[in-house]
View (cartoon, rainbow, N blue to C red):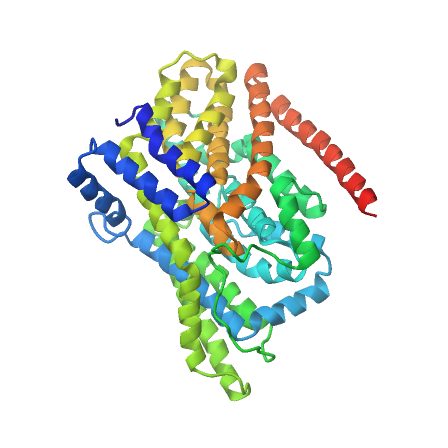
Length: 523
């Protein structure tokens, strides 16, 4: 069953069930059980043992899996900080302050998009931090939570994949180094190649362009339009009948003594301490070599997130404790309630993430990615369609596995081997197509950790986020695929890039016309 067509069954089963039942944990559980049965030939005892192993490996793999544990603790810290900020009145004060300065829905959406680009050091951190900062502002202007999640998700991985000074950039630059050494590529260094590949990532270009168009206008597509209409007309920002990870359920007394700094100081602490910790751990792990790219290649993101989350939580507690002196409604036992409420709000995300990790482990064991990769490696493919074919194949792999990094690891070396044997001049475009496809597939997948984190940061149901984001992601992917096809057929990156830009311009003109037509009908 391993590395055969049957290896596609567990991820496809999980994804189809998610879309049909809208129940993420149940669907992931079915995918996990089916993968265990397939790997062990339907032997019940061995399947149960493998099932246990798939969950255990998230926490213990030849020793304590500190990376995953630190990430889970950071998520819990975010929930606690959110609760404490709400308890201290910081969210209310910040929203009131922001409304006076950011007076339009357009302004709140543009701010979110810009924050997503500015906070690019890591996709997890981006998703959760941008959500914490932007949510009070977008809520005050009646921007739906699914729209917020779309902005967060579309400016996290797409920005990280082209930012050299990020956890993604460091990983990819190191991958390029191995590939270049294998094929004796000396025309450019891995860092130079990474920078040259950024404008060749047509999916990122299309995604960011559409994000800013949607932020500037009130035009929306399909399910997103429905959610935005409800938010604008009724103030109902999300479906309260569905579980929303990151949404607080505790009732705290109204606090009129909160200040803007009660929200900003913990968030600033998160950002600053994360950056400092990433630099420090990278510096220590690279034998104290003071090179920014070497540092980020060796940085320890999970422990950096843990340290910043812990210190920001302590600061949030201290900021509330100071109110005991002058706030008559402040009580020390509310801190415990905030702790419980914050943890409870993040438990859905925690469980989904653990199940997603388990499924990813089993998908790797059953060889889903390797089977898809072999489809390309074993067939004679015309050189002109290799970029677009690898874009599509990588997207399918990332969608099915929920992992862009796993897709990078498998298809970057395979794509390089194929193109170096046929047309070495297309090496960077082909590698860019792999990166773009991985981000697109991960962007759409309901079992992707980045998808889960974006929904958590926005405080909205995971499936609602997936279904409302999907049309935008697919449109960006179609534009990117056309660009890679043009690039492959012409051999020109410039022609491919220009074709993408021209399609975007025509698309925006059409959408702008439709938007004005709708405004005229409503007016």
